[in-house]
Amino acid sequence: MTVFVQNKDFKAGETINRLSKENTTGAVVSFVGFVRSFYDGQSDAKDMKLEIEHYPKMTLKSLEQIEQEARLRWSINNVEIIHRFGELKMNDQIVLVAVSSSHRKEAFLACEFIIDYLKTEAPFWKKEITDSKEEKWVEIKEADINKKNNWL
Amino acid sequence: MTVFVQNKDFKAGETINRLSKENTTGAVVSFVGFVRSFYDGQSDAKDMKLEIEHYPKMTLKSLEQIEQEARLRWSINNVEIIHRFGELKMNDQIVLVAVSSSHRKEAFLACEFIIDYLKTEAPFWKKEITDSKEEKWVEIKEADINKKNNWL
Amino acid sequence: MRINVLFFAKLREEVGENKLSINLEEFSSATIKDLFDDLSTNYKRLSLYKGEIKAALNQEMVKDWNVKISDGDEIAFFPPITGG
Amino acid sequence: MRINVLFFAKLREEVGENKLSINLEEFSSATIKDLFDDLSTNYKRLSLYKGEIKAALNQEMVKDWNVKISDGDEIAFFPPITGG
Image (cartoon, rainbow over the protein chains, first blue to last red):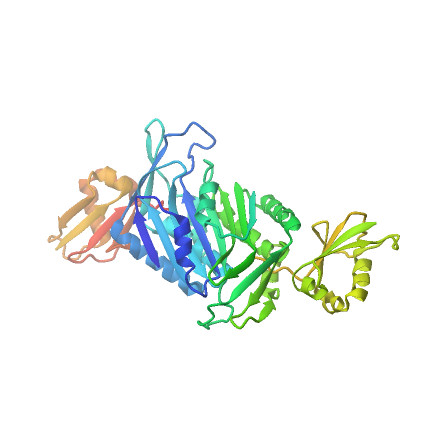
Protein backbone atom coordinates (compact mmCIF):
# COMPACT_ATOMS: atom_id res chain seq x y z
CA MET A 1 0.00 0.00 0.00
CA THR A 2 1.10 3.55 -0.75
CA VAL A 3 -0.33 6.44 1.24
CA PHE A 4 0.12 10.12 0.54
CA VAL A 5 -1.19 12.75 2.93
CA GLN A 6 -0.56 16.10 1.36
CA ASN A 7 -1.88 19.59 0.83
CA LYS A 8 -1.26 19.70 -2.89
CA ASP A 9 -3.62 18.33 -5.50
CA PHE A 10 -3.15 14.90 -7.05
CA LYS A 11 -3.67 13.20 -10.39
CA ALA A 12 -5.87 10.11 -10.16
CA GLY A 13 -4.56 8.95 -13.54
CA GLU A 14 -1.02 8.64 -12.19
CA THR A 15 -2.27 6.47 -9.35
CA ILE A 16 -4.18 4.24 -11.75
CA ASN A 17 -1.06 3.92 -13.90
CA ARG A 18 1.06 2.96 -10.92
CA LEU A 19 -1.45 0.28 -9.92
CA SER A 20 -1.58 -1.23 -13.41
CA LYS A 21 2.05 -2.34 -13.57
CA GLU A 22 1.50 -5.93 -12.44
CA ASN A 23 0.71 -8.53 -15.09
CA THR A 24 -1.99 -10.00 -12.90
CA THR A 25 -3.86 -6.72 -12.57
CA GLY A 26 -7.03 -6.80 -14.63
CA ALA A 27 -9.00 -4.14 -12.78
CA VAL A 28 -8.40 -0.87 -10.98
CA VAL A 29 -11.34 0.65 -9.15
CA SER A 30 -10.92 4.14 -7.80
CA PHE A 31 -12.96 6.52 -5.73
CA VAL A 32 -12.32 10.26 -5.74
CA GLY A 33 -14.13 12.46 -3.24
CA PHE A 34 -14.68 16.15 -4.03
CA VAL A 35 -15.69 19.26 -2.13
CA ARG A 36 -19.26 19.79 -3.17
CA SER A 37 -21.49 22.72 -2.41
CA PHE A 38 -22.77 22.41 1.14
CA TYR A 39 -25.40 25.03 0.45
CA ASP A 40 -27.54 22.57 -1.40
CA GLY A 41 -28.71 24.11 -4.63
CA GLN A 42 -27.28 27.58 -4.03
CA SER A 43 -25.19 28.39 -7.02
CA ASP A 44 -23.70 31.56 -5.53
CA ALA A 45 -21.64 29.65 -2.99
CA LYS A 46 -18.45 30.37 -4.87
CA ASP A 47 -16.13 31.29 -2.05
CA MET A 48 -16.93 28.42 0.25
CA LYS A 49 -13.95 26.62 1.65
CA LEU A 50 -13.22 23.41 3.42
CA GLU A 51 -10.45 23.14 5.97
CA ILE A 52 -9.14 19.68 6.69
CA GLU A 53 -7.18 18.92 9.83
CA HIS A 54 -5.54 15.59 10.54
CA TYR A 55 -3.45 13.68 13.08
CA PRO A 56 -0.32 12.88 11.07
CA LYS A 57 1.22 10.23 13.33
CA MET A 58 -2.00 8.25 13.45
CA THR A 59 -3.06 8.49 9.82
CA LEU A 60 -0.78 5.85 8.33
CA LYS A 61 -1.39 3.44 11.19
CA SER A 62 -5.14 3.63 10.83
CA LEU A 63 -5.04 3.29 7.04
CA GLU A 64 -2.75 0.26 7.31
CA GLN A 65 -5.21 -1.39 9.66
CA ILE A 66 -8.04 -0.73 7.23
CA GLU A 67 -6.00 -2.16 4.36
CA GLN A 68 -5.13 -5.28 6.38
CA GLU A 69 -8.80 -5.81 7.13
CA ALA A 70 -9.62 -5.49 3.42
CA ARG A 71 -6.92 -8.04 2.54
CA LEU A 72 -8.39 -10.52 5.00
CA ARG A 73 -11.65 -10.31 3.07
CA TRP A 74 -10.63 -10.10 -0.58
CA SER A 75 -7.80 -11.03 -2.88
CA ILE A 76 -6.42 -7.71 -4.05
CA ASN A 77 -3.11 -6.67 -5.54
CA ASN A 78 -2.38 -3.14 -4.47
CA VAL A 79 -3.87 -0.13 -2.74
CA GLU A 80 -3.08 3.57 -3.03
CA ILE A 81 -4.65 6.24 -0.88
CA ILE A 82 -4.18 9.99 -1.17
CA HIS A 83 -5.82 12.36 1.31
CA ARG A 84 -5.39 16.11 1.22
CA PHE A 85 -5.40 18.44 4.19
CA GLY A 86 -5.44 22.21 4.63
CA GLU A 87 -7.68 24.63 2.81
CA LEU A 88 -9.70 23.37 -0.16
CA LYS A 89 -12.35 25.02 -2.28
CA MET A 90 -15.41 23.90 -4.17
CA ASN A 91 -14.85 21.07 -6.67
CA ASP A 92 -11.38 20.38 -5.29
CA GLN A 93 -10.35 16.77 -4.92
CA ILE A 94 -10.17 15.64 -1.28
CA VAL A 95 -9.40 11.96 -1.28
CA LEU A 96 -8.51 9.10 -3.59
CA VAL A 97 -8.78 5.40 -2.86
CA ALA A 98 -7.65 3.06 -5.63
CA VAL A 99 -7.47 -0.72 -5.54
CA SER A 100 -6.08 -3.14 -8.10
CA SER A 101 -6.95 -6.81 -8.42
CA SER A 102 -7.12 -9.59 -10.96
CA HIS A 103 -10.90 -9.47 -11.08
CA ARG A 104 -13.12 -6.46 -10.78
CA LYS A 105 -15.52 -7.67 -8.06
CA GLU A 106 -12.78 -7.71 -5.43
CA ALA A 107 -11.52 -4.27 -6.43
CA PHE A 108 -15.02 -2.77 -6.21
CA LEU A 109 -15.64 -4.29 -2.78
CA ALA A 110 -12.25 -3.43 -1.32
CA CYS A 111 -12.35 0.14 -2.64
CA GLU A 112 -15.79 0.81 -1.17
CA PHE A 113 -14.82 -0.90 2.09
CA ILE A 114 -11.69 1.22 2.45
CA ILE A 115 -13.43 4.54 1.81
CA ASP A 116 -16.29 3.57 4.15
CA TYR A 117 -13.80 2.82 6.92
CA LEU A 118 -11.58 5.79 6.13
CA LYS A 119 -14.55 8.13 6.57
CA THR A 120 -15.11 7.05 10.16
CA GLU A 121 -11.71 5.69 11.29
CA ALA A 122 -8.90 7.69 9.69
CA PRO A 123 -8.13 10.80 11.76
CA PHE A 124 -9.29 13.65 9.54
CA TRP A 125 -11.73 16.41 10.44
CA LYS A 126 -13.44 18.86 8.14
CA LYS A 127 -14.50 22.41 8.79
CA GLU A 128 -16.75 24.31 6.41
CA ILE A 129 -16.26 28.01 5.89
CA THR A 130 -19.13 29.74 4.14
CA ASP A 131 -18.99 32.72 1.79
CA SER A 132 -19.84 34.91 4.77
CA LYS A 133 -16.88 33.41 6.71
CA GLU A 134 -19.00 31.38 9.09
CA GLU A 135 -17.06 28.40 10.35
CA LYS A 136 -18.68 25.10 11.17
CA TRP A 137 -17.11 21.74 11.99
CA VAL A 138 -18.70 19.04 9.88
CA GLU A 139 -20.76 16.62 11.95
CA ILE A 140 -20.41 12.90 11.52
CA LYS A 141 -23.13 11.56 9.24
CA GLU A 142 -25.47 8.80 10.33
CA ALA A 143 -25.22 7.44 6.77
CA ASP A 144 -21.43 7.09 7.08
CA ILE A 145 -21.72 5.20 10.37
CA ASN A 146 -24.31 2.90 8.81
CA LYS A 147 -22.19 2.27 5.72
CA LYS A 148 -19.28 1.26 7.87
CA ASN A 149 -21.42 -0.93 10.10
CA ASN A 150 -22.86 -2.72 7.09
CA TRP A 151 -19.43 -4.31 6.60
CA LEU A 152 -19.37 -5.82 10.10
CA MET B 1 -23.20 10.47 -20.94
CA THR B 2 -20.06 10.67 -23.01
CA VAL B 3 -18.80 7.62 -24.90
CA PHE B 4 -15.49 7.24 -26.69
CA VAL B 5 -14.72 4.16 -28.75
CA GLN B 6 -11.17 4.49 -29.94
CA ASN B 7 -7.95 2.68 -30.69
CA LYS B 8 -5.71 5.11 -28.87
CA ASP B 9 -4.98 5.03 -25.17
CA PHE B 10 -6.82 7.25 -22.69
CA LYS B 11 -6.12 9.11 -19.47
CA ALA B 12 -8.49 8.18 -16.67
CA GLY B 13 -7.52 11.34 -14.81
CA GLU B 14 -8.93 13.52 -17.58
CA THR B 15 -12.23 11.69 -17.38
CA ILE B 16 -12.38 12.11 -13.62
CA ASN B 17 -11.64 15.82 -14.03
CA ARG B 18 -14.42 16.21 -16.59
CA LEU B 19 -16.88 14.49 -14.26
CA SER B 20 -15.98 16.68 -11.29
CA LYS B 21 -17.14 19.97 -12.78
CA GLU B 22 -20.61 19.99 -11.24
CA ASN B 23 -21.01 21.56 -7.79
CA THR B 24 -23.22 18.70 -6.69
CA THR B 25 -20.62 16.05 -7.51
CA GLY B 26 -19.13 14.66 -4.34
CA ALA B 27 -17.92 11.32 -5.68
CA VAL B 28 -16.47 9.87 -8.85
CA VAL B 29 -16.05 6.12 -8.99
CA SER B 30 -14.15 4.70 -11.90
CA PHE B 31 -13.29 1.27 -13.18
CA VAL B 32 -10.36 0.67 -15.54
CA GLY B 33 -9.93 -2.75 -17.13
CA PHE B 34 -6.47 -3.87 -18.26
CA VAL B 35 -5.05 -6.61 -20.45
CA ARG B 36 -3.62 -9.06 -17.99
CA SER B 37 -1.55 -12.12 -18.67
CA PHE B 38 -3.80 -14.91 -19.89
CA TYR B 39 -1.08 -17.47 -19.27
CA ASP B 40 -1.74 -17.45 -15.58
CA GLY B 41 1.53 -17.12 -13.76
CA GLN B 42 3.81 -17.34 -16.80
CA SER B 43 6.03 -14.33 -16.68
CA ASP B 44 7.52 -14.89 -20.12
CA ALA B 45 4.30 -14.01 -21.92
CA LYS B 46 5.69 -10.71 -23.06
CA ASP B 47 4.52 -10.60 -26.64
CA MET B 48 0.94 -11.60 -26.04
CA LYS B 49 -1.62 -9.44 -27.70
CA LEU B 50 -5.31 -8.83 -27.49
CA GLU B 51 -7.34 -7.89 -30.53
CA ILE B 52 -10.66 -6.22 -29.91
CA GLU B 53 -13.35 -6.08 -32.58
CA HIS B 54 -16.59 -4.17 -32.22
CA TYR B 55 -19.84 -3.29 -33.98
CA PRO B 56 -19.59 0.49 -34.23
CA LYS B 57 -23.20 1.29 -35.10
CA MET B 58 -24.51 -0.74 -32.19
CA THR B 59 -22.03 0.29 -29.51
CA LEU B 60 -23.47 3.66 -28.58
CA LYS B 61 -27.06 2.38 -28.66
CA SER B 62 -26.28 -0.45 -26.29
CA LEU B 63 -24.29 1.74 -23.89
CA GLU B 64 -27.10 4.31 -23.83
CA GLN B 65 -29.56 1.61 -22.88
CA ILE B 66 -27.29 0.45 -20.08
CA GLU B 67 -26.91 4.03 -18.83
CA GLN B 68 -30.69 4.56 -18.90
CA GLU B 69 -31.18 1.42 -16.86
CA ALA B 70 -28.62 2.64 -14.31
CA ARG B 71 -30.39 6.01 -14.05
CA LEU B 72 -33.69 4.28 -13.33
CA ARG B 73 -32.05 2.66 -10.33
CA TRP B 74 -29.78 5.33 -8.85
CA SER B 75 -29.45 9.08 -8.69
CA ILE B 76 -26.24 9.81 -10.57
CA ASN B 77 -24.87 12.93 -12.21
CA ASN B 78 -22.78 11.88 -15.17
CA VAL B 79 -21.27 8.88 -16.89
CA GLU B 80 -18.23 8.56 -19.15
CA ILE B 81 -17.25 5.38 -20.92
CA ILE B 82 -14.13 4.78 -23.02
CA HIS B 83 -13.59 1.46 -24.78
CA ARG B 84 -10.59 0.72 -26.97
CA PHE B 85 -10.53 -1.55 -30.00
CA GLY B 86 -7.79 -2.94 -32.23
CA GLU B 87 -4.55 -4.45 -31.07
CA LEU B 88 -3.57 -4.13 -27.42
CA LYS B 89 -0.71 -5.61 -25.44
CA MET B 90 -0.16 -6.70 -21.87
CA ASN B 91 -0.97 -4.08 -19.19
CA ASP B 92 -2.70 -1.85 -21.74
CA GLN B 93 -5.88 -0.15 -20.67
CA ILE B 94 -8.97 -1.60 -22.36
CA VAL B 95 -11.99 0.12 -20.87
CA LEU B 96 -12.96 2.90 -18.50
CA VAL B 97 -16.32 3.40 -16.81
CA ALA B 98 -16.61 6.46 -14.59
CA VAL B 99 -19.70 7.68 -12.75
CA SER B 100 -20.21 10.86 -10.76
CA SER B 101 -22.86 11.44 -8.10
CA SER B 102 -23.53 13.47 -5.00
CA HIS B 103 -22.98 10.49 -2.73
CA ARG B 104 -20.55 7.66 -3.17
CA LYS B 105 -22.88 4.69 -2.71
CA GLU B 106 -24.77 5.48 -5.92
CA ALA B 107 -21.56 6.00 -7.90
CA PHE B 108 -20.16 2.64 -6.73
CA LEU B 109 -23.34 0.79 -7.60
CA ALA B 110 -23.88 2.45 -10.98
CA CYS B 111 -20.25 2.01 -12.02
CA GLU B 112 -20.24 -1.69 -11.21
CA PHE B 113 -23.66 -2.15 -12.83
CA ILE B 114 -22.51 -0.48 -16.05
CA ILE B 115 -19.31 -2.52 -16.39
CA ASP B 116 -21.18 -5.73 -15.56
CA TYR B 117 -23.70 -5.00 -18.31
CA LEU B 118 -21.10 -3.71 -20.76
CA LYS B 119 -19.19 -7.00 -20.47
CA THR B 120 -22.15 -9.02 -21.75
CA GLU B 121 -24.25 -6.51 -23.73
CA ALA B 122 -21.99 -4.04 -25.51
CA PRO B 123 -20.86 -5.45 -28.87
CA PHE B 124 -17.14 -6.04 -28.33
CA TRP B 125 -15.25 -9.26 -28.89
CA LYS B 126 -11.74 -10.15 -27.78
CA LYS B 127 -9.21 -12.41 -29.44
CA GLU B 128 -6.05 -13.49 -27.65
CA ILE B 129 -2.84 -13.93 -29.61
CA THR B 130 -0.13 -15.81 -27.73
CA ASP B 131 3.62 -15.34 -27.98
CA SER B 132 3.66 -18.24 -30.45
CA LYS B 133 1.03 -16.47 -32.58
CA GLU B 134 -1.80 -18.82 -31.69
CA GLU B 135 -5.13 -17.06 -32.01
CA LYS B 136 -8.08 -17.79 -29.78
CA TRP B 137 -11.37 -15.98 -29.43
CA VAL B 138 -12.11 -15.31 -25.77
CA GLU B 139 -15.06 -17.34 -24.51
CA ILE B 140 -17.81 -15.71 -22.49
CA LYS B 141 -17.21 -16.26 -18.78
CA GLU B 142 -19.82 -17.87 -16.55
CA ALA B 143 -18.79 -15.38 -13.84
CA ASP B 144 -19.64 -12.44 -16.12
CA ILE B 145 -23.07 -13.83 -16.91
CA ASN B 146 -23.71 -14.39 -13.22
CA LYS B 147 -22.56 -10.88 -12.29
CA LYS B 148 -24.98 -9.40 -14.80
CA ASN B 149 -27.83 -11.64 -13.69
CA ASN B 150 -27.28 -10.65 -10.06
CA TRP B 151 -28.62 -7.19 -10.97
CA LEU B 152 -31.91 -8.55 -12.32
CA MET C 1 -36.45 -6.39 -50.19
CA ARG C 2 -32.81 -5.69 -49.59
CA ILE C 3 -31.17 -6.21 -46.25
CA ASN C 4 -27.66 -6.08 -44.89
CA VAL C 5 -26.26 -8.93 -42.86
CA LEU C 6 -23.19 -8.42 -40.69
CA PHE C 7 -20.97 -10.99 -39.01
CA PHE C 8 -18.57 -10.34 -36.19
CA ALA C 9 -15.65 -12.06 -34.49
CA LYS C 10 -15.53 -15.85 -34.90
CA LEU C 11 -18.59 -15.83 -37.19
CA ARG C 12 -16.98 -13.27 -39.46
CA GLU C 13 -13.99 -15.54 -39.78
CA GLU C 14 -16.14 -18.64 -40.40
CA VAL C 15 -18.25 -16.93 -43.05
CA GLY C 16 -15.27 -15.16 -44.57
CA GLU C 17 -17.27 -11.96 -44.97
CA ASN C 18 -18.10 -9.15 -42.60
CA LYS C 19 -21.06 -7.91 -44.62
CA LEU C 20 -23.53 -9.42 -47.07
CA SER C 21 -26.09 -7.45 -49.00
CA ILE C 22 -28.98 -9.82 -49.61
CA ASN C 23 -32.08 -9.59 -51.75
CA LEU C 24 -34.95 -11.37 -50.00
CA GLU C 25 -37.61 -11.08 -52.73
CA GLU C 26 -38.35 -14.79 -52.53
CA PHE C 27 -39.53 -14.60 -48.89
CA SER C 28 -42.89 -13.03 -48.31
CA SER C 29 -42.31 -12.54 -44.59
CA ALA C 30 -38.88 -13.61 -43.48
CA THR C 31 -37.85 -13.79 -39.85
CA ILE C 32 -34.38 -13.69 -38.32
CA LYS C 33 -34.67 -17.44 -37.91
CA ASP C 34 -35.55 -17.92 -41.63
CA LEU C 35 -32.61 -15.77 -42.60
CA PHE C 36 -30.21 -17.70 -40.36
CA ASP C 37 -31.38 -21.07 -41.68
CA ASP C 38 -31.00 -19.80 -45.23
CA LEU C 39 -27.49 -18.51 -44.53
CA SER C 40 -26.59 -21.85 -42.92
CA THR C 41 -27.21 -23.69 -46.17
CA ASN C 42 -24.63 -21.48 -47.88
CA TYR C 43 -22.24 -21.24 -44.95
CA LYS C 44 -22.37 -24.73 -43.47
CA ARG C 45 -20.13 -23.97 -40.50
CA LEU C 46 -22.59 -21.38 -39.18
CA SER C 47 -24.86 -24.13 -37.93
CA LEU C 48 -22.05 -25.42 -35.71
CA TYR C 49 -22.47 -22.31 -33.60
CA LYS C 50 -26.24 -22.07 -33.74
CA GLY C 51 -26.78 -22.62 -30.03
CA GLU C 52 -24.55 -19.74 -28.98
CA ILE C 53 -25.10 -17.21 -31.74
CA LYS C 54 -26.65 -13.86 -30.86
CA ALA C 55 -28.54 -11.66 -33.29
CA ALA C 56 -29.17 -7.94 -33.48
CA LEU C 57 -31.82 -6.26 -35.62
CA ASN C 58 -31.00 -2.67 -36.46
CA GLN C 59 -28.39 -2.59 -33.70
CA GLU C 60 -30.66 -3.93 -30.99
CA MET C 61 -30.31 -7.39 -29.49
CA VAL C 62 -33.04 -9.76 -30.61
CA LYS C 63 -34.15 -12.37 -28.13
CA ASP C 64 -37.00 -13.81 -30.18
CA TRP C 65 -35.70 -14.90 -33.57
CA ASN C 66 -39.27 -15.02 -34.91
CA VAL C 67 -39.22 -11.26 -35.30
CA LYS C 68 -39.93 -10.15 -38.90
CA ILE C 69 -37.36 -8.55 -41.15
CA SER C 70 -38.26 -5.46 -43.17
CA ASP C 71 -36.73 -3.82 -46.21
CA GLY C 72 -33.53 -1.96 -45.38
CA ASP C 73 -32.97 -3.75 -42.09
CA GLU C 74 -29.49 -4.43 -40.79
CA ILE C 75 -29.16 -7.84 -39.15
CA ALA C 76 -26.03 -8.86 -37.30
CA PHE C 77 -24.96 -12.31 -36.11
CA PHE C 78 -22.20 -12.74 -33.58
CA PRO C 79 -20.93 -14.96 -30.77
CA PRO C 80 -21.53 -14.02 -27.13
CA ILE C 81 -20.11 -10.64 -26.26
CA THR C 82 -16.76 -10.52 -24.47
CA GLY C 83 -16.30 -6.79 -23.97
CA GLY C 84 -14.66 -4.78 -21.26
CA MET D 1 5.48 9.92 34.40
CA ARG D 2 5.30 12.29 31.49
CA ILE D 3 2.72 11.98 28.75
CA ASN D 4 1.66 14.04 25.77
CA VAL D 5 -1.97 14.92 25.22
CA LEU D 6 -3.17 16.07 21.82
CA PHE D 7 -6.44 17.71 20.85
CA PHE D 8 -7.87 17.93 17.37
CA ALA D 9 -10.55 19.85 15.52
CA LYS D 10 -13.30 21.30 17.69
CA LEU D 11 -11.61 20.08 20.88
CA ARG D 12 -8.38 21.79 19.92
CA GLU D 13 -10.32 25.02 19.55
CA GLU D 14 -12.17 24.56 22.85
CA VAL D 15 -9.02 23.78 24.80
CA GLY D 16 -7.01 26.42 22.98
CA GLU D 17 -4.03 24.08 22.71
CA ASN D 18 -3.12 21.33 20.29
CA LYS D 19 -0.64 19.68 22.64
CA LEU D 20 -0.10 19.46 26.38
CA SER D 21 2.87 17.85 28.03
CA ILE D 22 1.65 16.58 31.39
CA ASN D 23 3.39 15.17 34.41
CA LEU D 24 1.24 12.49 36.01
CA GLU D 25 3.39 11.69 39.07
CA GLU D 26 0.38 12.09 41.34
CA PHE D 27 -1.51 9.20 39.75
CA SER D 28 -0.30 5.74 40.62
CA SER D 29 -2.19 4.10 37.79
CA ALA D 30 -4.03 6.57 35.63
CA THR D 31 -6.47 5.52 32.92
CA ILE D 32 -7.64 7.46 29.89
CA LYS D 33 -10.83 8.13 31.81
CA ASP D 34 -8.91 9.54 34.79
CA LEU D 35 -6.91 11.75 32.49
CA PHE D 36 -10.00 13.05 30.74
CA ASP D 37 -11.79 13.81 34.03
CA ASP D 38 -8.70 15.61 35.25
CA LEU D 39 -8.44 17.66 32.07
CA SER D 40 -12.15 18.51 32.29
CA THR D 41 -11.61 20.30 35.60
CA ASN D 42 -9.09 22.61 33.93
CA TYR D 43 -10.89 22.88 30.61
CA LYS D 44 -14.54 23.00 31.64
CA ARG D 45 -15.94 23.01 28.12
CA LEU D 46 -14.42 19.58 27.42
CA SER D 47 -17.13 17.93 29.49
CA LEU D 48 -19.77 19.38 27.17
CA TYR D 49 -18.53 17.02 24.48
CA LYS D 50 -17.88 14.03 26.71
CA GLY D 51 -20.45 11.78 25.07
CA GLU D 52 -19.04 12.15 21.60
CA ILE D 53 -15.31 12.42 22.24
CA LYS D 54 -13.02 9.72 20.85
CA ALA D 55 -9.63 8.85 22.29
CA ALA D 56 -6.50 7.34 20.80
CA LEU D 57 -3.60 5.87 22.78
CA ASN D 58 -0.32 5.91 20.88
CA GLN D 59 -2.19 6.49 17.63
CA GLU D 60 -4.66 3.66 18.06
CA MET D 61 -8.33 4.16 18.77
CA VAL D 62 -9.27 3.29 22.33
CA LYS D 63 -12.72 1.87 22.90
CA ASP D 64 -12.35 1.10 26.60
CA TRP D 65 -11.32 4.25 28.45
CA ASN D 66 -10.25 2.14 31.44
CA VAL D 67 -7.03 1.29 29.66
CA LYS D 68 -3.93 2.29 31.65
CA ILE D 69 -1.55 5.04 30.64
CA SER D 70 2.22 4.50 30.74
CA ASP D 71 5.18 6.83 30.78
CA GLY D 72 5.81 8.38 27.38
CA ASP D 73 2.36 7.63 26.02
CA GLU D 74 0.69 9.91 23.53
CA ILE D 75 -3.02 10.31 24.16
CA ALA D 76 -5.26 12.15 21.72
CA PHE D 77 -8.82 13.39 22.18
CA PHE D 78 -10.96 14.37 19.24
CA PRO D 79 -14.53 14.57 17.97
CA PRO D 80 -15.90 11.88 15.67
CA ILE D 81 -13.87 11.55 12.50
CA THR D 82 -15.21 13.23 9.36
CA GLY D 83 -12.59 12.23 6.81
CA GLY D 84 -12.80 11.49 3.14
